[in-house]
Image (cartoon, rainbow, N blue to C red; front, side, top):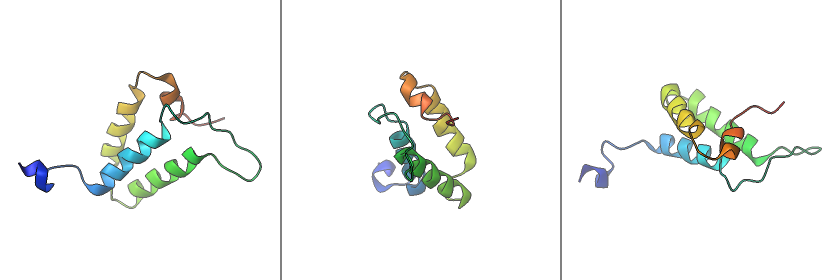
Length: 86
């Protein structure tokens, strides 16, 4: 019953981090392209995730667990979104 009241669950910043990670690596995202003066939407998701970690709202170890969970995803397009573009 404690899960109903929010006790012992994940924190709001961690839930936000996981939601951003899910959006950034979604199978439904089109392949990111960079055109003059614009950046892909996934870049903003990445910057928001980094802000949550650097501000101390999300522990780095928790962030790594989330990224590892996404790396184990069956869809290779989701995993490709986590790799740095060259």
